[in-house]
Length: 236
Image 1 (cartoon, rainbow, N blue to C red):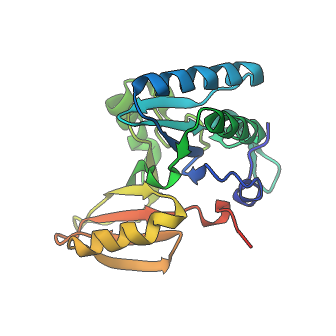
Image 2 (cartoon, rainbow, N blue to C red):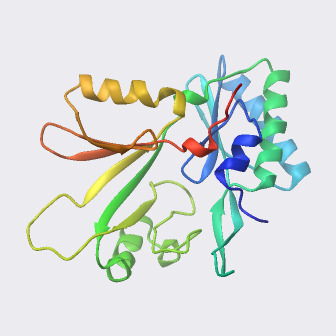
């Protein structure tokens, strides 16, 4: 099934969901574990009917869900096809059904409170270093390039954050190579940045804001606030 570009995700009008990194994410507030468990059972039955299921976790007072397809088809400009992890129409269809189920259960969505964390490592030699990181992070060589046409490391069990490799030129002087990327909903990005600045951070690059804002701590270590602006629902 073809991957959906961000603009098509925005057109779907999924009010309870936000596109963070590769998938659709949401959070529903629940009074207790039992309420959450019963909702998850209903979600599972809906997934059975469609032949597709979300990733689910039940936390204190909430149920978090992610929808992503592991067999999405990405086509390059020259027609070359890759099977990747991304949002497809089946994710959109199930998201709509889950939204209906949440309403039936009297649950309130709080998608703005959900974040997705990824790790970035700048290198000129991703092919050479990726095997070690795949082994270290996941214990499986198959996690290298899983769901991606690149050397990116993705754990099949989603127990550790994705690790992707950014391009870097050869250099001798030590410098920061690792950084964290925090994907957040568009409506909370400004506040997240403001809170980081109030806590001692400094914006070092906002040339691609609001999609990408680079913030440094007092020691100069960088983190990035990421927003999929194109996938954001446009009202009015």
